[in-house]
Image 1 (tube, rainbow, N blue to C red):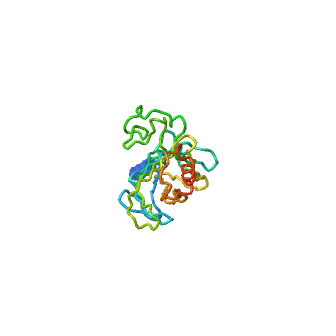
Image 2: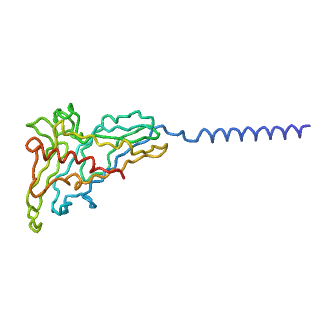
Length: 252
């Protein structure tokens, strides 16, 4: 009888140990995350070439040009959920340039999304704010070179400068200045990718890959003669450029 009691006790102890072990293993399983980090990866290109400040590029009209300053404000990013509801990404404004391609949107809910949209430019309130009131780490702060019109109380939404060969044969030096500064409230443009679906999965950070082709943005511009716009002094040229921004973007 004593022997049977000992066997029963050992069996009970083993069963208890097994149950405790299983319970412990189960409790140690990671809880699925409800949010993951979302990043926008923006490739700046000129046709099939990566945009940079060292190369000479050729546009679709065969005109040769260089880039000396190339920056763009992106703001008001909105994610569109699978049920059609919208998730604005608040507090995120990016001043993009060809040397930086990662722009962090932050933590977003796990799930399926129909697409997204954003603005090239800034909303009116921010556009007419004072750059000197922002800390130096903020993309809206005073920049060098400047990207704000002090005399017009507004930011330059899209800025490209460089030099171009203006000769008809395109055999001359690339030494004539061109300058495209697009700003003012009415020149912000919504870039719509509301049908480009993506998913954010638990335990895996998500990246939205975008391309922006400078050559496509300037496709309607004759760089040998249309050399300059500060927007208000050549609104026809500014409109032509701003209206090309949507087609210059592409989701990879």
